[in-house]
Image (cartoon, rainbow, N blue to C red):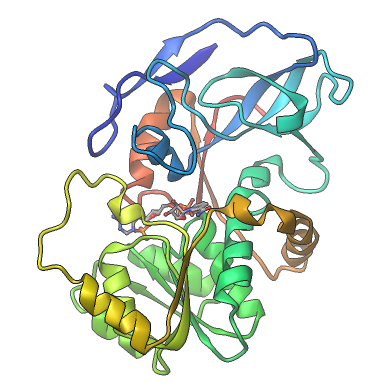
Length: 336
Ligand code: NDP
């Protein structure tokens, strides 16, 4: 059972000294439990937070433990009446080839209904995050301008397409030309600008001639600053992620811009609300009703970036924190 453990908490970008591949035992299956062989491991930005000791909305992974992660796999042995050998399942298997799970943390998947990988992508946590963040906080209205950062990623690509369905002008922000082309060409965004371009601010202003009504925040950093120059009165900003800061090791240089920022919040009457997708878990039924229909009708498309082999998980995770992924990042751990 090859597994990747958190050997040592990282400072800045995690590397091989922090995340170590080791050979472990295949775990014993206790009464009521299920042994699952991992097919896909989902790599997600939140994992950087779990590697840190800082207090957050979920507990850190302990040093020496297998890294946490959602997986899609197949049941090898079941001591639960709810699952049988051969079932495809979604479970919190972690960065390893075999995991023991309790049925309450598992969901059966129907490979005839959708590719099983989508259970950790467009039909899973990232898709759900986009759906609830936009609907519950962004509340986009027809004709409004919606901007989304990390636009080509797992969450961003879905945010933009749902906003298009709601009749909005949708502008993406991404860190590469091919990503910008893809979100416009494949997902139907109205425009997409590259935050790495020297004239990014001018490009963003041009793409948003009527200002910005909803900004779905995935990154922080310069993109947030540029957006703040363009927000309209009563704009809504669901704060979903701040990936530009996940490897920060120190506070930014002064001057303190907080008073100016709070002034803008007041004068423009902005709604800025952080959320974690599970806050809206009561909307899961709506999501699982709407999203498969949108996909089958071709209204929502998706891109997955599948990296072969558990041994490549660390470099792939580094790539996620550097924008190397093209769509939802997955590790193919075993055959499907
Ligand atoms: P993505 O598939 O979007 O991959 C991450 C992307 O972030 C990269 O491809 C890169 O795109 C961008 N990025 C990386 N580093 C930086 C940087 N320094 N500055 C700006 N952009 C950067 O990931 P997800 O869709 O899974 O996640 C997107 C965001 O949503 C993350 O912040 C994540 O933490 C958050 N999230 C929050 C949830 C919640 O419940 N609140 C749930 C799920 C995700 P590019 O090339 O465009 O820079």
